[in-house]
Image (cartoon, rainbow, N blue to C red; front, top):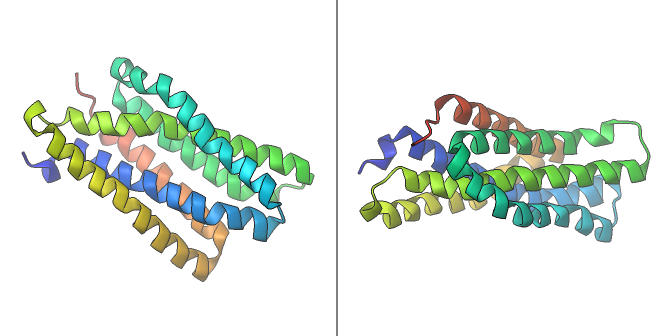
Length: 195
């Protein structure tokens, strides 16, 4: 089985890597973005950012099974597009002339959107990786997928830190949003649903 020449598998592995990049950047830089750059308290930062895994964990139970009925491409493309929009808005909110409490509400909505987007892609990626191989090779292929996916933690931390040091937190988070949107487009165009 040549997974490296399987376009669907390569796209899904790249999607997994980018998803973990997003997580490492979100957990590493979003607290600093809120606390240091915008004077949000540690407690409020914790509440805002806790919405992300709460929504993700609660909604993936329902969205995971839906990919079997509606197709992987829809969930992958829309999930990453949702994440891109949420991260882009997260960075742009301080540019709007609104009150502190209104900013907190908008950042919270971004965290909720990130949760929905991640719930759409997270179970879908693993199912999509499994779709690409025969049952006898499924465990091995999922091991390869998960290795590439989890490497995203290191890639995200190193790249985000370098970009943040050179250009600032806004560029690091905004750059990730742009990459996620391009990934969403690639998945929408090139990923092929399996029957």
